[in-house]
Length: 419
Image 1: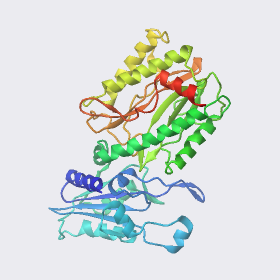
Image 2: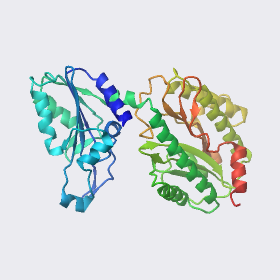
Image 3: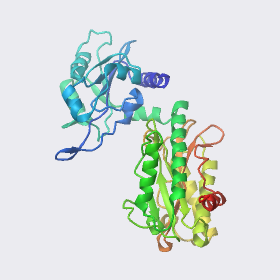
Image 4: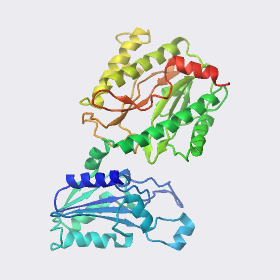
């Protein structure tokens, strides 16, 4: 609750006087004629309310020395709940959000219009309207937040619309102790899931079977949801970054790349590990793995406040190039981008690729990934090693330190997994 109140207070401090912010939770999107995609809440809304229910809206009004928050949700509808499940009561919404001014969605537009048209209220004449203008946010079947902006500007030409997403993003980039703890919990559960995969990994098992094992194991761990669709890629398949099909059987000579994570209270883990099916790293596979591991550890050691994500990427590219030359994997004149073709880092939080300004220097409280990789299609080998780290003033903290990545530790696990 304290986190939520502080987030809303910080957002108020960044809004202009005589302004209104309208932040929608979103609605489900149509998949086919009679089917909807599973609903995913707008995380800007969730960040400020702790509510995941669709067709809801947060209204924040900042006047002259006066600040008010209003939450709008659907009223109880017995027939609708028989079809789509129960909705939050007003009391439940208050307990989740810490907000006391909760009304039916039927009242939203009337109350917004009242705030925008009444020049003599306690807020003064409203001059600015903040909206989350992310194009994908739908507020009903036929309207997006951009459509809503156009309607408001036509109806109230004296009001200027401002995109609030960059402001909320700046808040979300710095994680509170509570948020870091949720990410730790997600990583801890992910570690358990990875241990289950190590026990299950054997020649002949299908990639999709391994993905299913990870998902269903999470359901048994407090119903942990996936942070994203699990990637399981064996052999040459691992040279495709977001390998989608997972229809191949694992071979004894393969390395298998796992890119996966669970959620905890909305916060994501994002971990990549690469394991030898045989239980032992040998030949070129060992060299490639060592090169990636060395880079992973070097970038973590290098990361500190003041650097940008681009700085980390430049460092990783140069480091990997030197490692590849050292191990005889590339020549000096070869282009590293032939075998390393993605970024080494992104922010992590409510989204796997969390809301961020990649140009902004890192600061204490940022949580980012470190995920160098090398991909040699001609050798049938792809390796990625990804950790989640917390930027601190002196030295980055590895939140995923307990998940094995050293060759000796991995080989020991495989030797003892049958015991």
